[in-house]
Image (cartoon, rainbow, N blue to C red; front, side, top):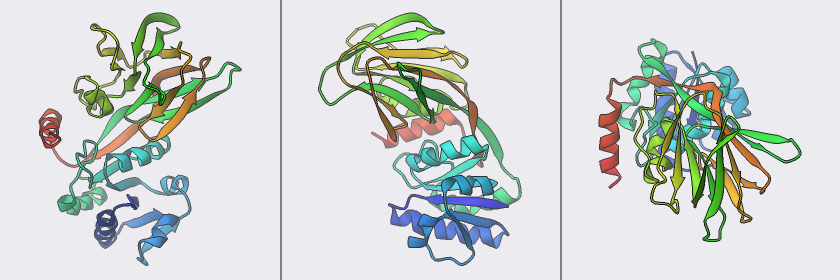
Amino acid sequence: MNIALIPNYDKVEAITCSLEIADILISQGACVFMTEKARDYISHRAITILRTDNELFAQCDCAVTVGGDGTIIHSARHAAVSGKPIIGVNLGHLGYVAELEPSEISQLKRLLTGNYDTKERMILDVSVIHEDGSSESYLAINDAVISRGALSCIIDLDVSVEGESICSYRADGLLFSTPTGSTAYALSAGGPVIDPCMRLIELTPVCPHSLTARTVIFPEDTVLSVRCKSHDTAYLTVDGQVSVELQRSDLVRVSRSEHTLLMNIMKDKNFYKIAGEKLKEGD
């Protein structure tokens, strides 16, 4: 079995933990792959080095990330496009998306025996369509946010469903979340906690200038479009990792992606119980 190992190289403990994981997996007969970046941090003769993330996911059967949720989300885009499952070892603060803690890495042996479940998670396709018809598309594992620029002024946003305008918001921004992302920015913006295995699109206004603006839940097949009507600068941010400046004529389209994220699950856990425990840790 070929397993991609992806640590957060900014954390010394993630590199140390990755070496331990590599030893465990190789001892069980797995082939472990890492990218060129590993050469500067890890010296392990039995690890195969590949040049890029694309090559890594083309070669692997599944991926193991070591770090926080950000490390998983960064790799999850490649995993979703390549159709490869992913599992995370948590070295972050909360770790909603990670499956295992560092003390549990011995359970990764189960990857080679098939003693685990794989669950699908819905992700979003987010497109920016320009006035000339050109466009760029991004995958959102957690969320996509349209927000104001550096100046502290609210923006006017018009939302359409299937091309028909349904509402307008005056707010700091709008947040479109997957069920997986419901416990991220959407939660702090007042959105509900949603089981990550559900399939829907969550829209939450960020600091709306209204007493009645609340989160709206849309069916998974809904196609949402947003246009910023303000003259002020606005930005699209995807998963807190990609930022795009929007022009006033740009249209942002949000829909369910044709790709899904495959998560390897090794623990029989109640999501709502875990979420409650994690929220208490964040207090």
